[in-house]
Length: 174
Image 1 (tube, rainbow, N blue to C red):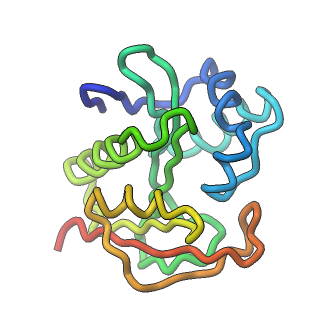
Image 2 (image 1 turned 30 degrees about the horizontal axis):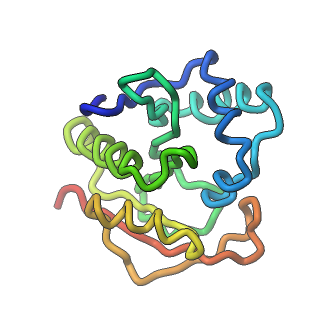
């Protein structure tokens, strides 16, 4: 999948150093609900056992340089208590701090949503953001996800001291 600026492609073991470079930043992971990575080996383990466990998770890559700058994907519910419908996947994403506020995350989410519409029979998707990360909600809204008015409290994720998550949904097919 690609646009003029980015490519969404499967994660490779050789992406471990780039993943560590950005996933070790203490400003990145906690906004998405996971702790900063502590080593390249941990990043490689995440590639092999989290990202590549589900083929619906892709690396966000800058087309011009080939640099991995984030992740985009959808799949089964995480351990949090998001109010999914039967068979409804949850969308998750993050982008490295140097690439914040440049439209890459919105571009990648829209690209994935176009892929889902063309290649799956999914009828809806759920997504959420910690209320202390409103930029993520703006990405969702730009891509057509609608706030449901619901919130859930995440106790299971990193920094989950009762952090509220605002819920968004996208109806794909009716």
